Image (cartoon, helix red, strand yellow):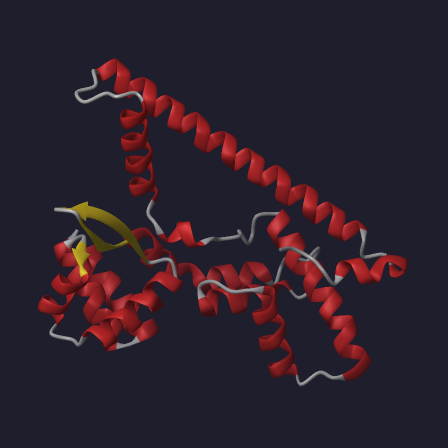
Length: 241
């Protein structure tokens, strides 16, 4: 584990610099910490810590959890080792993106997302046209191509939509759901069977929610791809929410 933590620090330092690596080092060594604790261990000012935590969260390497302690809500941060180690494969992801022959401009889109951690279709368009310096009729044509490619990448799960709650770890989400279920059932000291039933229900709810989200995204992508015919070009401009 010590070797893995050291490797994680090297990866983050190479990609984001010494200050981000310093915060990551503390989280890797100490585990889940609050902002005051991070400040105490790193000796950095709060503004700098917050800015660099945002960078780590933007790239899906740090999650947060809001815990109520003595009638106060304290935010804790913890680091995801798997996400850091996955950065070693960024070159491989980019190589594969160039071989997605059924998706036009996939390398440009995937490169932008990997570069920024998370991004929007507007961000992709702005980045692409700034680099290529495209104008006029070619600009309109490329906007349509990029939007169609973006939707196809989502439909085929190369890209996934993310929301604010996705910066909360899966474990914390489950714990929150378990506590909510215990309160609803008025269980103070639940038995092993009662906890098993609660966890099974949570698992089923998560699976059903994932299936519903996938079905909705696929249907939306199919509708948008169909609307990309020349006589329906105006509809394509709307794309995904």
